Image (tube, rainbow, N blue to C red; front, side, top):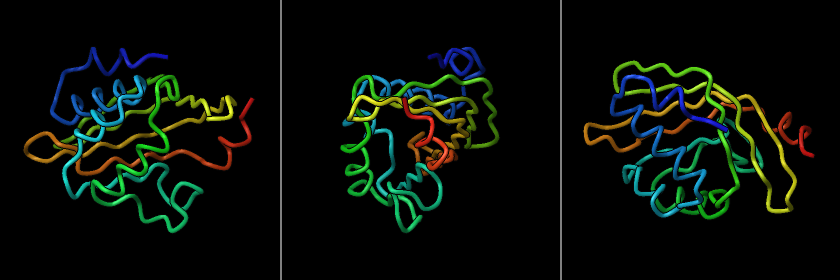
Length: 141
């Protein structure tokens, strides 16, 4: 899996935050990943209702994001293959494929669009991940 296209692109605060987020998530460094976020940040992964977020409101604030992190950020648990990266203002969009290894050792993949928005200090205020939870569940092998 590779995030090289994002590393090679001109750097902006949002793109830098997206790179750090992906690198830390892939390494399973949950506490360091959590430090990328502003206190009042929102993580919607995936966006909308899912087993991860039954109400579809997102994980709001560091306490909620910490719970999400504890459940989903672990070494070897996720990989990204990013094919396109776009920035606009304080936002970055990365488009590609995400591969996840579940706790039961099953593997699933999904096409993904990740949106990162940062504040003036470069902290993530919004991470919105668009991927199809139901479809990803069916790709498990």
